[in-house]
Image (cartoon, rainbow, N blue to C red; front, side, top):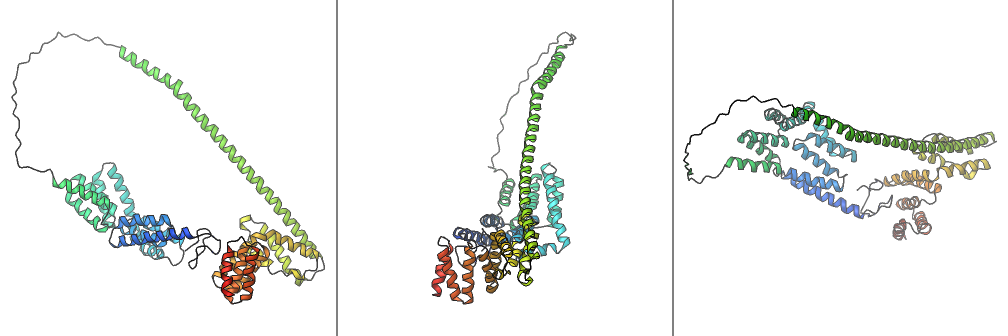
Length: 466
């Protein structure tokens, strides 16, 4: 299981992440429910209830998007139903969440290793979309021709079989429709669309019920009576120009109404839009200006630090010092100055902390050297301690306890409030069988950090070696 807070692997049955302290009780229940849905989806896929399996597996992924087993199975089902694009999408996402030992690698390799097969899959998707468009436009004959090519290239494309059957039903070719629906039902036995089409086809082919009794037609008598037409005298109509006059007046009134009512409204709309755009641009400029000012101040602060450190290094170089004692201090100071040239997120605090840990400050006999040492320690402090703790914790998980002790001890020296570093120092000694040292640091956690959640674990481990 992966901790959702720090993305680190959780070992054993702990209900709390050892690294960040996140309570995992709820997460474990969610993960268990996700796995349960995965198992249900697997059972449905085994009996070819593919559409039902898709619904269940999507629920599994809603609970745990990192469930690569469920995602890989969903991809396989999509592939079996002829939806290769959806299948590859699921496998790519699965690969993103699990880089190593992932079955998605094998599935994608099988699909992509055959260029001809891959090209056919791409063509089926394009032709299916073209056929769907033709069907919507009422061109059934062209759609049927395209769908035949699709089903020949990919006989398991369920949606193509369903659409082809629907078009055959519309054109009255019921036997061909039944044939395609039967193929679709063999691929996905519980597909509701296929079952609905089969029900409709059954209703169409059964026809209306006959009761065997001939209908009696009502006989009607029609009597013809002579009709006399009267002829009025011919009179030529005079042309009437008023309808044309009224039409012209109506058009004129409409144009005037548009000018006085619509045009001002449209003009106001575009004016408001223009004003809003100006306001948005001004707000963006102000935001950028503030960010620039903030970065400028940060740069000035960093420049001041660099200038001060350079001055101290220069003073040390000018003093009569033993190079073997101060070389490491000067090297660390120079490295830190170089790192300060980078942006805050790119500073390699681990590299600086590793060099800083090699300084033997107890041998300093010059106040300038001690001052530079203290300034570097204060500057890198918390960030370097966190970087060293991260490295040490990873080494602890890899069972490299000696290397872990070195980094964790340095982390604690840089930040004496780092309770996690102290706890894993104790755990490393414990794993190495150095119980006296382990007791010392367990007691340090209990006495110095009484409010920490690490205390209960420290007491439990301490009682096991006393």
